[in-house]
Length: 486
Image: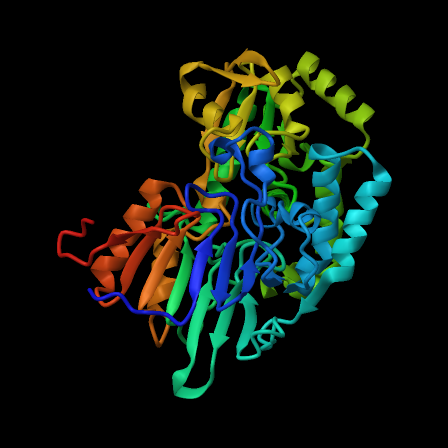
């Protein structure tokens, strides 16, 4: 298939070797616009600690930064971008603008500095540069590129998430470029499902679960209930690593529904669901949950109906939130000694930091413990190691020490906030005007190739490419052959 020549270039500064570090540059002439500036995590980090955060590309020509959503793998390098000299505007949805300072404040305190005055200066600078943009409104991001416009549309991934449409030119001569960011699965708790745009010419598409299918909403909630009841049968602790923004709120929403429906049923011997304690041990998650409640206008219709019915899906009576560090340490020690049947939700979601690490160190060797993964575990993270080697009583290294995994290990992929293969294909299929080219990013190699083959089979007119080098911007082309091979 003949390659189309675009009147611009797209350079990928991240999310080509895996699922982290999302950062893409739209360049035309001597001016550029960045889409996201995310942190590298897990096996994708190179060059020590600085490899996760380095701005290793020129930025003097970057005139605007547009953010898809507020997860560290999409915004975590933002402070370093500012430190490197970026002084342009930051565009994002209104909800992302409200959540972003909380995320960066926590990330800076954990991974960069304890200097509160420095943290406040960085966060205040981000606030001053951030311009909230309503969904569905075209804006001009760059003074040098007046012919370029952008628009945000709901992506259904977390509160405030968006996919970004860039439009170059007008009328029949226009070119539409779409950056998916992270697309959510249909029926994600609290959020409306993403809707496909009318069309695009070039689509930069995430592929996190490009080779998998999720369980349905009801099936995964029933599975969550069944797994928790199984885990609590020996009266142990259930640990759920979860990201502070998005996943924690979705879990609370689903647990509230389970308790509402099955409150009189037994979750553990001699303990009914309505009496089971749910511990959220994350100050950041608590702050995000408060923001989620304040941003209720962005919830979907189902969630709004629950509130009108007098229910509190993110603040029900069984939830205990732990804020201070002393109480956190005391809770870890208490559960280590007693094994009291408790559900603990704590960050980080991939077990590579945060308070979940102390729980794992204390409780992984205890066979009464169970770890339930409800999100993607990137290669090289402790979460992926526990997920892979836990079933065979292997070990994981945490903070320089090995811990034998005697705990049970379970995975519910349906709770991913990412679209699966079917959802990604539907996103393409529902466009009235389909792309000429799709670039697959933000996925492991197997996921990108599997999704690429399916796109080639279903949409043979679309050229599918996989960027393979951020510095040379080389790509691998999946040719549209009947056997689906490259």
